Image 1 (tube, rainbow, N blue to C red):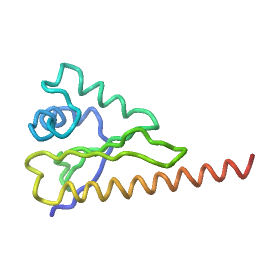
Image 2 (spheres, helix red, strand yellow; image 1 turned 90 degrees about the horizontal axis):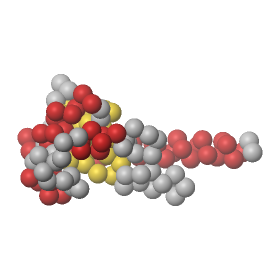
Image 3 (cartoon, rainbow, N blue to C red; image 1 turned 45 degrees about the horizontal axis):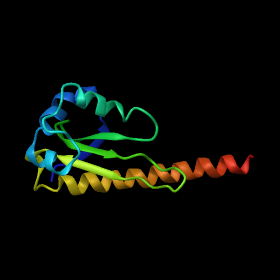
Length: 126
């Protein structure tokens, strides 16, 4: 399998997102509306602009878009988060989804550890 990376999902990925989100399997297994209304993808992407939802493009070593990986709202109190992903048809069957989920899971644990450390630090000084 080609090495892949998770990079912040942004407006530079809109064309690739439009193409991916028109795939029958992605439509079937996600909450993406069919057909995708004009402007929906931009609004969906904007939901990840704060500090409680995160979105990443799955890209290969050359920067080729292979899919996306996202979190639902981060529950900071209980340190819980839902992880989701979708890969393009060309990326399927190559271990891309498995590796992307592995990296996203690692990111989530690192994120929660970071949050826990900040939380303890703040509590100790209060």
